[in-house]
Image (tube, rainbow, N blue to C red):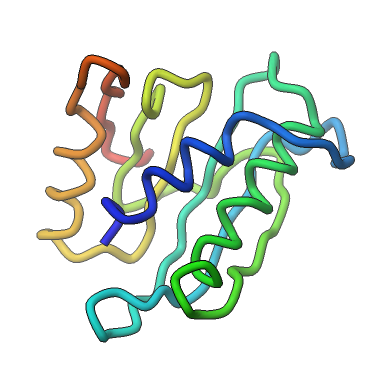
Amino acid sequence: MKAVVWPFFAACILGGSATALAADRACVIEGNVPVAGKTVAVKDCMEFTAGIPAEQLKASCDGLAQTSAQLGGKAGKVTFLAQCPRPASGACKGLMGQPLDSYYYNLSPEAVQEKRKACETSTAAIKGGTWSNGQ
Protein backbone atom coordinates (compact mmCIF):
# COMPACT_ATOMS: atom_id res chain seq x y z
CA MET A 1 0.00 0.00 0.00
CA LYS A 2 2.65 2.54 0.96
CA ALA A 3 4.67 1.80 -2.16
CA VAL A 4 2.09 3.92 -3.99
CA VAL A 5 2.51 6.75 -1.48
CA TRP A 6 6.34 7.00 -1.58
CA PRO A 7 6.58 9.13 -4.78
CA PHE A 8 4.02 11.57 -3.39
CA PHE A 9 5.84 11.61 -0.05
CA ALA A 10 9.18 12.38 -1.68
CA ALA A 11 7.63 15.29 -3.56
CA CYS A 12 5.86 16.62 -0.47
CA ILE A 13 9.01 16.66 1.62
CA LEU A 14 10.70 19.18 -0.65
CA GLY A 15 8.81 22.14 0.70
CA GLY A 16 6.28 24.86 0.04
CA SER A 17 5.11 27.84 2.04
CA ALA A 18 2.68 28.10 4.92
CA THR A 19 2.96 28.67 8.64
CA ALA A 20 2.99 26.26 11.56
CA LEU A 21 3.79 26.79 15.19
CA ALA A 22 7.54 26.69 15.75
CA ALA A 23 7.13 24.20 18.63
CA ASP A 24 5.37 21.71 16.35
CA ARG A 25 7.95 19.31 14.94
CA ALA A 26 5.56 16.49 14.02
CA CYS A 27 2.25 15.78 12.35
CA VAL A 28 -0.15 12.87 12.60
CA ILE A 29 -1.97 12.07 9.36
CA GLU A 30 -5.10 9.95 9.64
CA GLY A 31 -7.48 8.83 6.96
CA ASN A 32 -8.61 6.13 4.60
CA VAL A 33 -6.65 5.36 1.44
CA PRO A 34 -8.12 3.46 -1.51
CA VAL A 35 -5.74 0.64 -2.50
CA ALA A 36 -6.50 -2.14 -4.99
CA GLY A 37 -10.26 -1.70 -4.64
CA LYS A 38 -10.17 -1.68 -0.83
CA THR A 39 -10.15 1.14 1.68
CA VAL A 40 -7.24 0.98 4.12
CA ALA A 41 -7.26 2.98 7.38
CA VAL A 42 -3.96 4.81 7.82
CA LYS A 43 -2.46 6.56 10.84
CA ASP A 44 1.12 7.74 10.39
CA CYS A 45 3.21 10.47 11.98
CA MET A 46 6.19 12.37 10.61
CA GLU A 47 8.64 13.92 13.09
CA PHE A 48 11.10 16.45 11.66
CA THR A 49 14.46 17.53 13.03
CA ALA A 50 14.77 21.02 14.47
CA GLY A 51 16.60 22.22 11.33
CA ILE A 52 13.49 21.96 9.13
CA PRO A 53 11.61 25.29 8.77
CA ALA A 54 8.02 25.34 10.05
CA GLU A 55 6.78 26.24 6.56
CA GLN A 56 8.38 23.12 5.07
CA LEU A 57 6.98 20.93 7.85
CA LYS A 58 3.45 22.19 7.26
CA ALA A 59 3.73 21.91 3.47
CA SER A 60 5.08 18.35 3.74
CA CYS A 61 2.34 17.24 6.13
CA ASP A 62 -0.46 18.91 4.18
CA GLY A 63 0.89 17.52 0.91
CA LEU A 64 1.08 13.97 2.25
CA ALA A 65 -2.47 14.28 3.61
CA GLN A 66 -3.63 15.04 0.06
CA THR A 67 -2.24 11.72 -1.23
CA SER A 68 -5.48 9.88 -0.47
CA ALA A 69 -7.47 12.46 -2.44
CA GLN A 70 -5.05 12.05 -5.36
CA LEU A 71 -5.80 8.31 -5.25
CA GLY A 72 -9.57 8.87 -5.32
CA GLY A 73 -10.36 9.09 -1.59
CA LYS A 74 -10.68 11.98 0.85
CA ALA A 75 -7.72 14.00 2.12
CA GLY A 76 -6.32 12.83 5.44
CA LYS A 77 -6.74 14.74 8.70
CA VAL A 78 -3.55 16.49 9.88
CA THR A 79 -2.80 17.19 13.55
CA PHE A 80 0.39 19.07 14.46
CA LEU A 81 2.25 18.05 17.63
CA ALA A 82 5.57 18.63 19.38
CA GLN A 83 6.50 14.96 18.75
CA CYS A 84 4.93 11.78 17.40
CA PRO A 85 2.96 9.72 19.94
CA ARG A 86 4.69 6.70 21.44
CA PRO A 87 4.42 3.77 21.34
CA ALA A 88 3.88 3.07 17.65
CA SER A 89 3.81 -0.19 15.70
CA GLY A 90 7.23 0.81 14.36
CA ALA A 91 9.27 3.75 13.14
CA CYS A 92 11.66 4.52 10.30
CA LYS A 93 14.44 6.83 11.51
CA GLY A 94 15.97 8.98 8.77
CA LEU A 95 13.23 8.02 6.30
CA MET A 96 14.52 8.07 2.71
CA GLY A 97 17.73 9.71 3.91
CA GLN A 98 15.76 12.78 5.00
CA PRO A 99 15.95 14.62 8.35
CA LEU A 100 12.76 13.04 9.66
CA ASP A 101 11.39 9.95 11.34
CA SER A 102 8.12 8.31 10.34
CA TYR A 103 6.00 6.47 12.93
CA TYR A 104 3.32 3.94 11.98
CA TYR A 105 0.30 2.91 14.07
CA ASN A 106 -2.24 0.09 14.23
CA LEU A 107 -0.36 -2.17 11.81
CA SER A 108 -0.67 -5.93 11.47
CA PRO A 109 2.55 -7.93 11.97
CA GLU A 110 2.71 -8.42 8.19
CA ALA A 111 2.34 -4.69 7.55
CA VAL A 112 5.09 -3.95 10.10
CA GLN A 113 7.45 -6.23 8.17
CA GLU A 114 6.53 -4.51 4.88
CA LYS A 115 7.20 -1.08 6.41
CA ARG A 116 10.51 -2.28 7.84
CA LYS A 117 11.66 -3.61 4.47
CA ALA A 118 10.63 -0.37 2.73
CA CYS A 119 12.40 1.68 5.42
CA GLU A 120 15.69 -0.18 5.22
CA THR A 121 15.86 -0.48 1.42
CA SER A 122 18.36 1.80 -0.30
CA THR A 123 18.48 2.60 -3.99
CA ALA A 124 20.90 4.64 -6.06
CA ALA A 125 18.72 7.72 -5.48
CA ILE A 126 17.30 7.12 -1.99
CA LYS A 127 19.19 6.17 1.16
CA GLY A 128 17.42 3.70 3.43
CA GLY A 129 16.47 4.55 6.99
CA THR A 130 16.93 2.69 10.28
CA TRP A 131 14.00 0.70 11.68
CA SER A 132 13.02 0.94 15.36
CA ASN A 133 10.26 -0.60 17.45
CA GLY A 134 8.40 2.72 17.72
CA GLN A 135 9.23 3.53 21.34
